[in-house]
Length: 388
Image 1: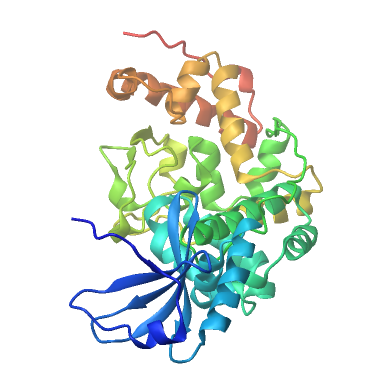
Image 2: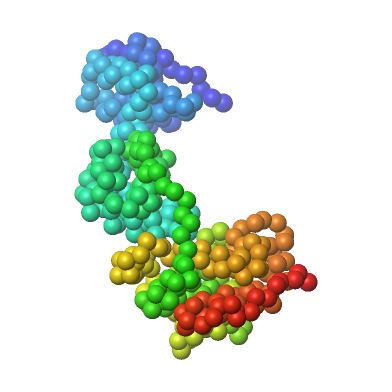
């Protein structure tokens, strides 16, 4: 049964007469709203300010009754309640001051306690934070970082899309910190993103041989298979079998450092003969040694060739556009590139379309290699897909 609240007008004498009981109890001061003393069975007494925040009680510890007099405790409680009336949360702010530490510490906690468990793309986000935020903020107290600091970070990053991605990564850290009451606000929340246009970049027929001559094996594999660059960069020999099929588990496999597919959906990709030639001797482990710098490599290639910037994802877009250009249709493109469409048909299609997917992948690879070799691409066989 809930005990009735003990409310009295506290005096120095009544405070000295407080005696311990078998269970902790609280005595409220009727003179100052929110002020109370918590008495423990050990006899220890502490000043508390108790207020409501979003319908939930908050307890702010002021200090020992033996160290803070009644008049001072009432003054501190009055200041606390005024801050609450102005929309602040003093208890959360106090926890944040001692809990978050530096931005580097907050970022590490976010990574270990949340991101690795909930965010499949955490390696990319972490790389952005390490490159653009940590060099300037690592030793700063997380609670002292302001919107001005975030805007300065955005200005230092020349590529608008990259700046937006970094802002999102930093914002995720602070959002988690607020949720965990390690910081009280997210300085990224009201920072404007850079305006961007939806990318439509694909490699032209004349560019394919130029880029191919500069491509790393991982970039070649991305163009030939049309799969997501991050998934290609984490391609493992353990997932390649069945005479040329690459199976991509939807869920992460930590033991193999496989991040899982972006949409969490398992996928099976036929590797055309040209792609199989890039696999090397096989065995186990990652297929490609250089797995995390595909974007950097593409930037260097574009600079060397003096052409419009293209990203690794543009190679995936080029592959998809070639599927439709060869007459296989958008459904085939979505199926081959593992776009989530929903429904039981997705499970069925992975098996039903195996033969057709093999023909599509080989036809697209043949088209690209014909361009690389300077052959007549009109002779590339276009095979219409008929659903069985």
